Length: 325
Ligand code: UFG
Figure 1 (cartoon, rainbow, N blue to C red):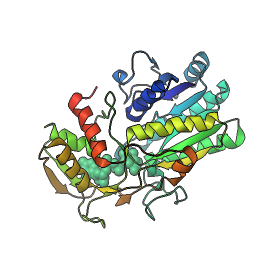
Figure 2: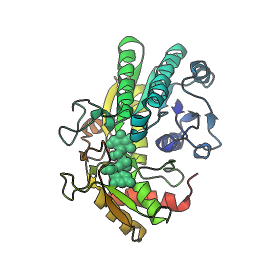
Figure 3: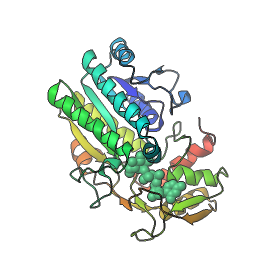
């Protein structure tokens, strides 16, 4: 299959590119390198440095590369930044996706796998969260992702177009050659591992008074390689002419911030300093996926659900590339 991966120079995108190549798909990447890294794309893969909002350019890429399906990661994804600068998210995430949908339609490309998020659910009313849980994003990031899903639903109703939207819970881990490299880094596991590497003085635990077993927030940590596998399965579903689908991707197992910290201490063998701080605005106490639909519809089973494995893989990546790409 000839697949265009938007945002293929980013964290989850670059891991998915490698998974597609490993099974023999022909992959082309488009990335404006705003947050992605050129070095995250193997030189053997064509990288078009382009912005998704440049519709004419995207049409040209889809046509000249004879693309059959698109996997769309390209977006900004920092919750806090989306609150302080919503326009940046509306413009890049929403306008970029509308431009891509238009370009696909005009190029006759009708299959899309979309990188969505558990942030569309907002504050959970019940846990684990299935896809029928009410949609109520509490920040512009989640709002833009939900709008993009709705734009795809409209396109699927009107045009020769089908999509699979994958709502990730907490992406983490690494493969030997690709891993997390954000600036600034805000995600829990890489932040803890930066403390272990001596790059930060301590971890700040954001809140210890939640209604959870140890008072810290609980999240569903899902290995990036398992996420990538779900994208391949979603592409196969669309190639088999099956209908559009929205589904969660998570392990269905929650770990607290303290449990993640303890696992990182055990894996690294280092005494990682932490301080207990106030809650971070907008953090729900518990986010755990019910991913039954992904298991049933995509035949997807996470191969690396164990937190220790996830942290070992992340630690191997951070050790090999302490300064990132
Ligand atoms: N945390 C800390 N200290 C830190 C960083 C994080 O205590 O320095 C805590 C957070 O408060 C949270 C947990 O660790 O309880 C995980 O935080 P992350 O920032 O790693 O991830 P989030 O759960 O906030 O958000 C992630 C993605 C979002 C996505 C969301 C959906 O970054 O894009 O999962 O589950 F929307």
